[in-house]
Image 1 (tube, each protein chain N blue to C red):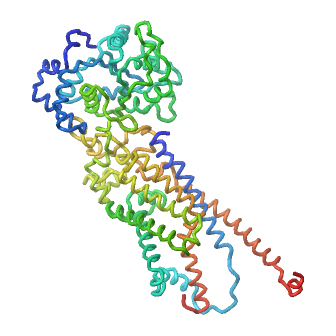
Image 2 (cartoon, chains in turn red, green; image 1 turned 180 degrees about the horizontal axis):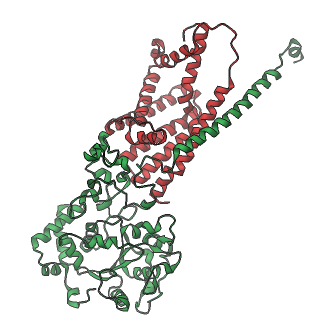
Image 3 (cartoon, one colour; image 1 turned 90 degrees about the horizontal axis):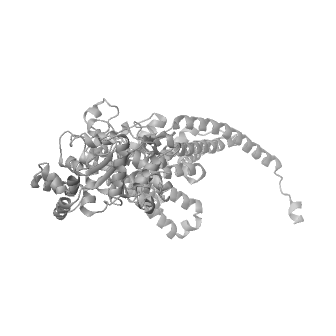
Length: 219
Length: 391
């Protein structure tokens, strides 16, 4: 298989397989969560579930003072990494073009220097959080193989993307093909790993907020 | 065909002088060649000396499944340049398009040149070689494969000119009806065969030639840049060896950087300024053509630096995205006008079908889960004091 054939495969059938598994996996998992249902609450509602739910989705993004003091490193590194990843994924022109192709939605891109910097910051932060994970006794104890797998499949697109952008080590078509393949790996693993938190986190927050509001307590 | 004995014995220096090239122009050419090939300035006298003394090398040019675009590119310079004169000064003993001879006489010129320069001539190939049916492309009744293997056996080095010879090109593109292969793939497939075939009677030691041992230089492009050929020839004449090559056999001096990295429109890419269509404001302002399908980021060639038509411009400068013509299988690369980050097939409908199918599956699984939950509730039996006492 030549380099361009490899690139054509990851841009064609490879991407199709990955996106089908990703979409189907996410839809099945979310359907399962929603369709499982909850026991009907016979108590009188003391507040709006919807309002409480939406409020908590946002309010939980801002850590309270004591939590922040207790877990400053985790919160700061988590924010840096997630913002870096978000900027890298959603503000690089070729990525926006891909989203536009699939959904028809488009927005302005950022200069490559900013994307480059955010990718580097994300990679460094991911390495730092991994070191923290293996050095922290409790974190290490509760970490599973799945957690390390998720770390690998998250950092791979960042590293391969950086290498493809700067053409490091291999020829450009191969680097681009490997980068796209690493994203396909991420898409395939997404519904079946903790990466699903991107979808389940707002649902969990909404549920917490909704039950608290129903009971008339603060969330 | 140049068969004048005196002319053949002349050195390159003699040939250039006889064509009125001054020493100054010659040194300027050597300096330009050195800088083009990323050699230090200290190499200029060495290049000049070596070229001066170099005997005109015998070159046999075989054209197989090709469109003659490569020859057109190499011969259609607007003005006579020293590069062209170097070209004129090689002993091009066989070339379908350029030679005056035809028929038996033409074929005899090839075997004659092979006999005289066995082990020393350069073999230039343009066009891919069919393998499905040998009758698809024959010359003087000889299949392309036989002619190539026979001629390659006595060559000092093989230069695959153009994307067809280098990577198979358009004949190799899907569905490849003729079973076309590049020179490199043909050698991989048939190179170990001992060549003592068709005209071995005229070539005394043909059976010694193992084609797989021959160095191959690929000069891809559809067509390739003329100066790259002269650069390779100059390197060969100067150092008696082939230039440093990349993993696809391309001279690194010319194929070392991607079009994207050398493109004058690169700053627009970095700023996020793109032409969205061929006639929008961005296109008029000369912004980056990435969104219009430019393959510059994955293409290695010298277009952005040496340019075409005597340094006038190159495709991107004319407002058209790079097609990636110097890369393998570029015809099957997923559409010339599709940006590199866009999937080559319809992902949107695949996603919709996947979502619809998964939603149906999700409902079914959800129903099963609900049933499981209910049966778990109904099957649940409370532990009584009696149960605990039993244990």
